[in-house]
Length: 143
Image 1 (cartoon, rainbow, N blue to C red):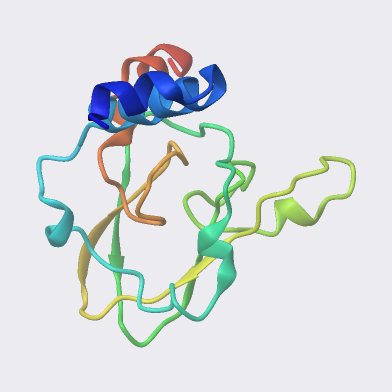
Image 2: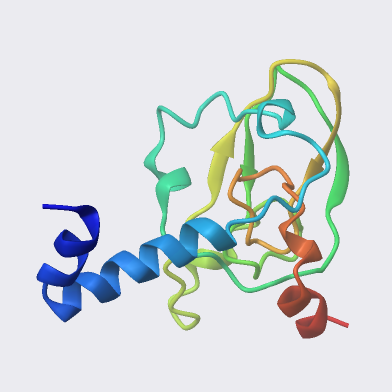
């Protein structure tokens, strides 16, 4: 059986899923001028599940925040977008009236230097900026 026959023999729902996945793979873009291996790594990502949250927070700003970070400290990056101490968490997500589902991302760095932290809250490399803020929909939302 050829791949063409196989494609037409599956139910329509499976074809829809196949086409959707293919489209998502084709449309995946990198908004960063750096390669994926050049982006900083959260050293605590494997130890805390907060970095695996599926939802992103509200867009706080359409540009990243440059911050000097030290390897001796542990930081809490705001994912919800409601902190008054951006890009770091101030505990605003604990307010029961806001009903916020997102939790802060606990992270450390491996060397002392300036890092670009995401302020649009849409990054795939939490908490570091990967250039996602350059998307047209994000630029249009925040003035």
